[in-house]
Length: 277
Length: 277
Image (cartoon, rainbow over all chains, first blue to last red):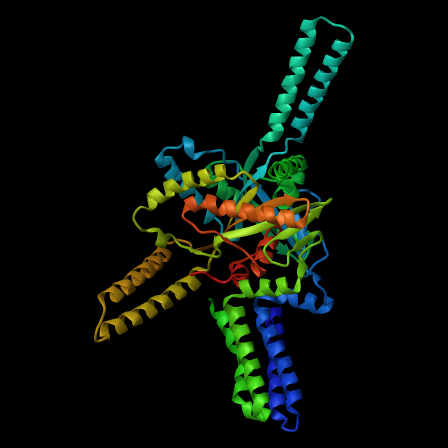
């Protein structure tokens, strides 16, 4: 029997039994009857809550605190081959595979007919698979850390060159050139930090369950292959399974917003706050 | 509201009905009044949890300050409207927004005039929306094929009901042409859907939603930033002629879990959401 239904029947039967017994015992004082009534009502409310909140009932009663832990396990781990994420749900393993859809087309370069065809292709894509597939368009902030570091080191080198030329009494033209170079790198650094660059990626996600890790993994890979052939047939592109650290971009929030961007945003917010304050 | 929810409500309402039916057992006077009040309170809660749990559940957790930890390092806030992850003192708040949570998508409903124009405009509207948003977000379409025979049986049931309504409307003394016309249109749509299934089209169910993440140095700042992003998304998506609604409560938990594992079939997906027809 479904666990949820089992819980519902248990709570419902308890609630009804308490109320029936309470009203049935005539010798019971009214004040006790009301107390038992409240308990019966509580079970009836609990029985209804099972429909949507069965996942909460056990943790709430076991922990009896404000910060309730539904699960203390990691949300997922990456498979040893690096081509899927795994998680545990109940006693089963759930494996999820991500498939990149390389679409680099824009409506600005399409005629109305091409736009219509593209819309039709999208409809076909969504209905291509019998199994649940999630298609996602993700816009995330580009990680410019390496780029910024390169510019920053170039700016530092140019400033160093300028100061060494000034201190050694080099010709004024050489000093001016070095100063211009330092200024150029600094301006570039300021501009790169100022603007947030966004990237867009489209991918599909499929999951499969299994009693063993390898079972879930192989079924998910099989499903991913089905989805990939569907995507290839509809769009005429070559989809690929996303592997390794790239998967984190799709599941971990911190990979959506790089650390450097975050600190820049905060500095900007603080500056704006100072100006407004 | 689906039949399952109504079944749960009907069963749980047995408790307050039992109380009202046995008022004499409480000895009359103040105790009977108290019993009636408790039964009324119970019934109100049951109805509210069935039809507006998205309002009742966050209200309870907000008042009691209850938070949930769905997985290690993640926390669902007491308002039940965001999932927070704390990484080295930085808080990443993720929220979900939908306009048609579990909408039933069927090609037969897209036979109206101007569909082609809508499909063409959809691409431009989407690109305009993406360009106007300057933060990280994801747009998900989760689709799954439905069992053809079950959908066919459902549609035939709906058609029979509409035909019954039609015969009632025709037999009425003061039959209204507007009502008859409305019922006839409904029958035509259902018939078109049945014909399409007969023609080999796969009935699909889909779930579309946005996910956005904001970052802050404290929980509050991350949640404030998230609220601002959700508002911006709502404004940006208004060009797509859809109203976005923020997800709260159990559906937030379900959608958050979908980031790591998808449902494996239609029934699992269907049981998690209230169906919008």
